[in-house]
Image 1 (cartoon, rainbow, N blue to C red):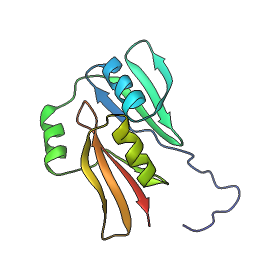
Image 2: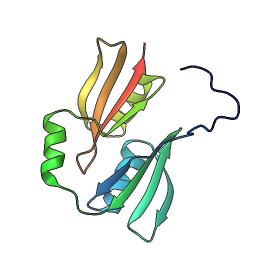
Image 3: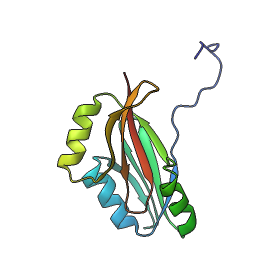
Length: 130
């Protein structure tokens, strides 16, 4: 990642939008199980949560069950979250009652990561470079 000229616009963050069945259930999961903070709720159907510089938007809307099943079957990620202190984070999330879908393990590409699946089937990968 080279140095860009000082006047080059940059992207500060990204927030994937997850379609959820029940906003209250999703908010409780992200806050209670994953330690995210509630940033906003708009008219009871749209919300934003964050932890550190990771942002997620949650929107009550129908989603395709077949698409969710395809992503789970293929272990396709919905969000990749680069972290520091992965051992402590893993222990914290287990203590919070998060269901770990894939255990903390070393990957051949030089990371250690684990997966969590949220109540709507979204796969989040927490990863740290070694």
